Image (cartoon, rainbow, N blue to C red):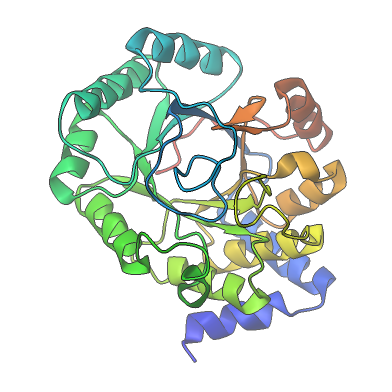
Length: 316
C-alpha cells in the first residue's frame, strides 16, 4: 500500500479522541488556531452544465428545477465583491457551470471579473471546469490567486459519481494550474455513499501532489431532488470530523475549508471540525445554488470559539 494512503487509513481508524488530539497538535504546529479565514462563493454562471456529476443540481442531465442564469455582468461582481469585503471576507470565489474554459468573450469577461476582485484587495479564486496551461496563465496574469478543481472522491469510487470527465482530466487541470504559478484549491465531497477507505484515498491523492494544495475544501453532500443521489442517507457528522482531522494530518500547511453542507451540522460538530484543524469557512447564506448558514450565525459561531479574521494571505 502507498505509505501516504497507509498513514491516512491508520489515522482515520484511530480512537476518535486520539485522532482529534493528533490533528490538533499538527494544526497548532503550523497555524494560529484562532486564524480562521472567511471566504465567499458566488455563482457567476448557473445551470446547464454538460457534466453528469451525480450530486450536482447544475447538471443538464437532471431536472432539479434550477433556473439557468447566463454569465453575470461586471457591475454585479463589483457590488458583490464590495459586500463580501464589508462582511469580513478575505477571499472571493467565483464558480461557472462549465465543463471547461473556452477562449472568447465569456472568458475575457471572467478575466475582467478577477481584476475587479483584486481592486477590492481580496484574494481571488475561480472554478471554471477544466483549464489548459495557456488559459491558466491568462488567469494568473489577470491577478487570480487560486484555482479550485476538486477531485470529489477516490479514483476507485469516482466512476460511480461521474462519467463525463475522468479522474486524470482533473489531475491534469491541477497540473496546468500549478505550472501557471497559481495556488491550488482542491478537495472533495463526502457522504456520497463512498467508504471510509475512499475518503482516505482521496485525501492521500491530494497529499501526494507536490507541492500540496494550499487549500482543501471538505464538502458534505447535500442531496438534491432530481439528482441520482437525492435519496442518499445522511453521513454521521463524526465521519465528517474524522475526514477533516485526517486532511489536517496529511496536509499540515494547507487551509482546510469547511464548505457545503454546514446547514445540516450542529454548532458542536463544526466546533469539533475546527479543533481537528479546519481553518476556513464560506460566509453568506448561499454557496453557488445551495443554502449556507447566515453571516450572523457564523459570526456567532466564530465568536464562541474566539476565531479572528486572517490578516495574512493563504500562500505565505
